[in-house]
Image 1: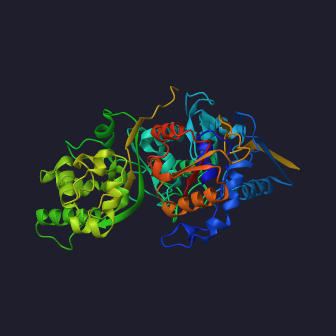
Image 2 (image 1 turned 90 degrees about the horizontal axis):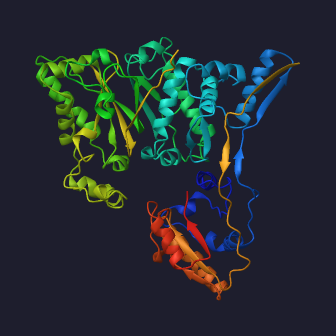
Length: 425
Length: 97
């Protein structure tokens, strides 16, 4: 963790450290080992030396594998990926120059265009490096422009990706796509949108590439570059399209609300989530639609009403999360006069956490210690899960069915949109 | 034999800063303690400070309470300015877990 942290500041991936087992860092721990290791503090201040003595770019070397036949080569490549901790447990394509050149036909960006540095390791995400990762993940050229836009959004300073990368709460980027390119490339917006879906493979491939970029270029390896305790939905991340055809009249797209993108624009909206939960919102056999709608909204607000520290992260300027509503339910809501703003206002009001709950769960300390002045001064009697209702993201997506919503619980200091720039030809 | 050449998936890195030269000795030097206020730093750092003071009486240890504390504050310009104002020669930072 510390090695990656110093690398993110431009140092070599090394530092003078004194390390202890995790038990020492817990409440009421035995601190005896600190004194036992005191000499190491002294040597760190006096005799420790980094192995690196020069600044400059360290290019990634080309790799070569030899084997008796083609299938053996592929096995050895994948063995190498796992041995070097570059894989994810499933077979990967070797990113040969030919394969990467094919992927690069999906963008007009120059291969050496630098998108940014991926923390905590600080690796340089060039367009070529991103294309190579997409190639490994089984991607296609038409996915590349979306992946580049997603990486741009993830590396936006407001996203604080250096924090979510290292976070023990296992946050992961959620990428929602608007625009006609979603259908063109086979991105799911309906049944099973989080996959796996052989009819819509783009999301899995792009999401897998994002994970590999964060792991390999960014160094977020389990228990090393990232302290993600459980991992969660990080294998293929969450890359899907909003069901624009299912939006009721007067309900704007997510990209329009967050980034002012007009109809027909291709854009990604990205935020970080620490988990997701399915919300069964339907009644068993309702006679009155209004009653079912109100039951469902109250039940949904109940799922949002948790004393989570994660909400503190996005309280002032980010989001507490995103609610996915199917076109079926969105149509019912709109038919009864509910706008997106009205739904958000209801959820915001009914997800407030009473003062007793804020206090006994220790949430008060997290709120008051926030570096955001607005967050630290937030009202706690009751505590709204975000500063304003508009911060709750609402997207129409998922199978055309009335039973469920999906809630992505955010750990998101910001929500970032980016245009997807398709190649001219 | 079949051969296959491919790219290293980690991409390039750039080193822009070198680690500071270490001190020749601690005597006569000022050692600052910086706390992220997590993972029992409030208990561990004073122990480190006490040990350094006991074993290097010619060194000056400036406790973590003299500087901004907390994960959100110790990487700020204000903290760097505070360290410079105290003319510290080296810093011990804790705790990461």
